[in-house]
Length: 435
Image 1 (tube, rainbow, N blue to C red):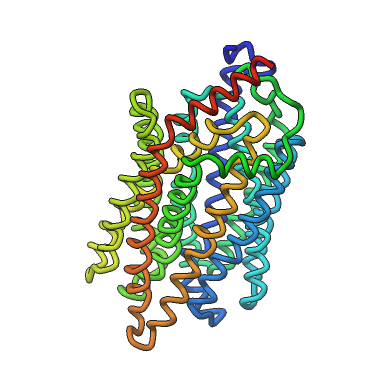
Image 2 (cartoon, rainbow, N blue to C red):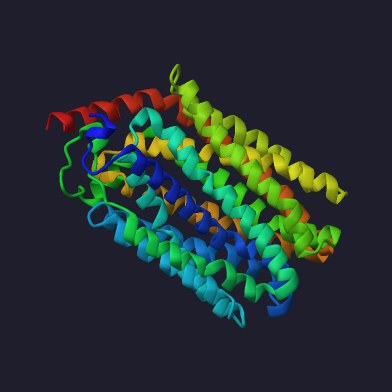
């Protein structure tokens, strides 16, 4: 079945939805990573330890982001994805703005709980809807464009958040960059269609998802998923730790202001991340036409190389060298994002396309997004009696290369299983088409 023959879908709408989902991801990452550039001021005003800062940016967000994603994925495999997504965007945007009124550790943590709950809905909804509009061979490119929203969001969070904080304070930054998402939620509600599931592949929609335990067993029975899930989890841990703690590292080790940090880091996290995500989707898609194992091997190479180069960043004694070196992991770590998204969707059946990423989100979100920043904060406080203000430097030098190499190994092992697992998924979907 061609795209034009799919009910309610035109090429123009396909492009519109992809662009809108990328914009949603931009806003998602603005609200998710905004605290990172504000941490030096938040630490000072609220008198927080690094362990508490790690909880605010890590576990406070990650616990709800990961656990709520599973029921949201199930709901979106059953009910109207448009309405659910609009509600989620409105929630995380309002809670980001509310973060600006925090007066202590507890109120800031509560606001971040709400952001995590709302943001858990974007990934399952976007993956599911985009997979209904793009055939398997075009998904890597589409997910590469979608994932480009991450670096754009980081660029705005670092640059806008840095300079707004410099002139107006961190509280205004939360409100100014949080509330625009409410408008976006209305746009999603009024303009997005909940298109037919599986229409682009002419797969018969069974009408309801299988029992959760069936989905869970199906997913974890796939060898490539087990390895690639751990690969993306540890890569995400490295990427999140760098995004979260590098502004504080530059502030403490080199005395840079939030405005300066935002200005220097924004091109690296924005343009660098953009190159990485688009390059990852395009390169893996091209190589996979000849050998599908490259879907795992490309992120294995990029993650391993990026994390090792990232470790050198924290050994630098000059801020210029540190800023230049940090661009390497910020380009190479995002390479896995569109590739892993494509792997998940190519393994999933029609009514599992929101549940698969939601279950994966539980593992990757809890460990990579939640525990990673917390781990660095605890390590920094533990070595502070010996290292003083340089404690954060040593914590990052330990965490980044260790988990980066670990993630690369899993991507390599997962790649070895992908040809067989993809063939099994195609065979299963062929049975649905026949049905």
